[in-house]
Length: 297
Image (cartoon, rainbow, N blue to C red; front, top):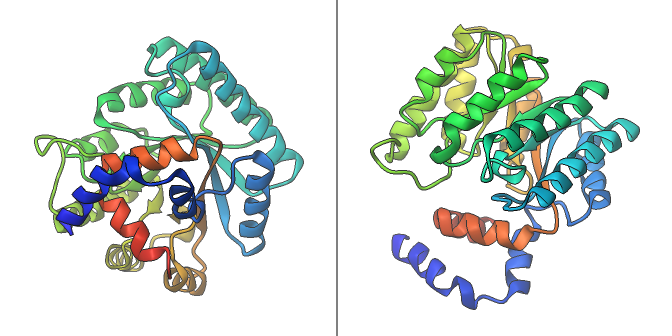
């Protein structure tokens, strides 16, 4: 499998864009907001909540950062207008963190203002460890203005337990494993150890009365999370289960439904689907084998 993953990276530039699109299409809700809204409505009709994300990252110009910021504000207006059960997730590098910290904070503040106006919620996505500190700094600054802000904690980082401990109680996190290719000096590499740390972090977050978006497609890990929730008699209002749009989750969705658990789909959309898909595969070639394995399910 390791050889296959490396081979995928080598031949990636030779794969026709139309083939990449076929693979990516299952995991992306179109290129326009209209298409994304239709996907959200379909998910809402099944009782699922949604988090919407505009595809893109590492924006290099202030003008483009401003445009993306304006697009997120338009999304919040559309969510309100169409009465969708949906919030948004924003990558710091998409709206200015690669330029400087002032620009990303200013743009997040604009989006936060719109979220306040429309009684909605913003999630700051966590990217590579290069900007973990900056992301937390921006989050803490925004939290001073209003509480409709959440952040992401990555279970494979050794620092994550400390990061949760530094968060205010009664806040809101998405807990995921982490997908970026990080150094073994700062990140756990063994899959089982990542899962074990995930459970420790989840337990600690509940200790601190932190709302947790339990984001995983790993059935074994999800089962352990459910066992922890039931053993501790955690209220269903203290967490939700999250998954990436397009990932086969029928078995787990039935379990969530039978337990009256809240479910949220993370839905990406936008014109930058190709760059996003290629970058994700290059950063973590395991994605390629995962996608190819599941595309025919």
